[in-house]
Length: 189
Image 1 (cartoon, rainbow, N blue to C red):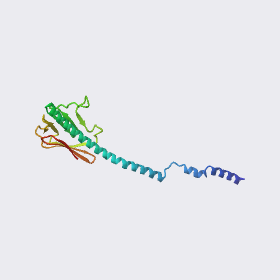
Image 2 (cartoon, rainbow, N blue to C red):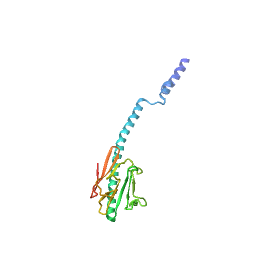
Image 3 (cartoon, rainbow, N blue to C red):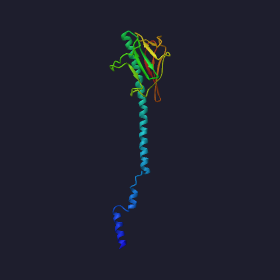
Image 4 (cartoon, helix red, strand yellow):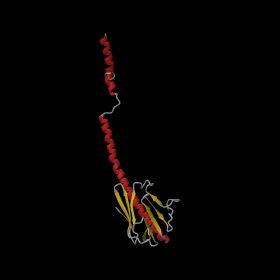
């Protein structure tokens, strides 16, 4: 009964899910086109969500940097008025940094970060590292000084005619201006 043995074997395979040849082919380790398309769609959705976040991070950083510069210019001006001596804010666009100095040219200690000099370095600050100082122009110098009345002077020591700091992050540009005579500081987007 060779035919009966074949039927028994055949029925045993059909109880296990069919012929072993078909069963082994179904267990191959490849991916279907549908699975690959699903993964590509998930990656595309993630990329679409991340790009605006990165763009908004740059705009938040540039606004923070402009506010920080404005506050530090106001701080130097108020120090000049309260102490009755000259204080300066000196910018270095090659190192993306600036510092506040006393009338002797020494960097003053930071009022909040005890033990540190008052130097703000955009490159080494993760909160501001997307921001570039594009241009600094205090009548062709990179320094603004405030006298005991809070009036601004350029780095050469003559009264300020024009004071502009230009910042850029991503595609956004912001300008911080210092007005002549009054020393009024403002941000222009």
